View (spheres, helix red, strand yellow):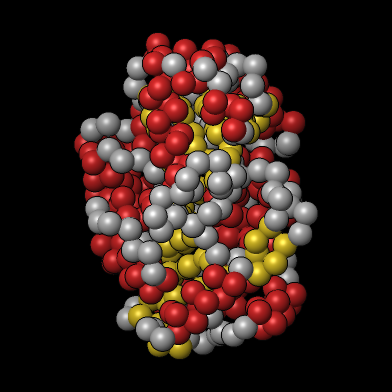
Length: 406
């Protein structure tokens, strides 16, 4: 399966049916800040007051890994936002906000957004794109919009750590939020359910803001309530790079077992498994299988540099549909990134070949079997001179999820 083979697969893959979707709960505004050598060298950015955010940014840049720092000190975060208030540009942010606007732009027939802490500007952005916000929570738009700082960088501005893959990426600094951003008041939830019965997909996020067993248990109960409003609804959890052990335990113990699907990158997988990152393609497959078996997930989608992996239970696997969904999502993301040209990733093609040597061949090219699960691996399209990195993982995951029949 060389470059010509995969180029033909991308060419032949059509546009799949897109399913009506509910997105929640993490919505905010992003201040997109392009990182340059001049920015890094500014005396103010090297001051003691900004030293912590600079250290986190440099760590992300050294590893070319998407990282997020949740800032607990509100006064400290306010100083950060004030310093960068005239830098970059504002855009919709948060996994739910990004996915909602993107899926609406793709023509998904119904896109609902649940965001209990939605601000007025965010609410207007959603409305302008035709995203429906149930009346019971639209009043949240009278609050204030939360702004996250998203630093987008290219490799080479700082020396790379040993073993790091050079790639465009981003670092996010955001305020530590509470469960109010993720949990819906019970009376509001009951009123919302009749409005979302058309949705057969739910793309959910924001569980990194839960703090104790009670909040995780309540969130899991609300997921089950959402699923009951339509027996065909499939729930996907989009992961983030949270390092708090109690949050990771809550996700694995409560949230993922009541979901059908989840999405992540290789760093987030290692955090959920509590182990060092598995950097080989076969090692990543084994890690994803371990997570699926541990949590009972039907579907796990992992995106990493050069290739995408999809693990899906044999009882829900539709080979051609699943592969079409992945290839379609890859095309969409390459377009959204805004590059000048695209080509197939040689590293991704090589990764698929490495997996061939470890797992049994499956029913379609690029598919493999492992016990009760099928594995799909496809090389990505690499866009050159891209204009954005923020939200590409959310766009990829949400697109593949609403495009898949399972």
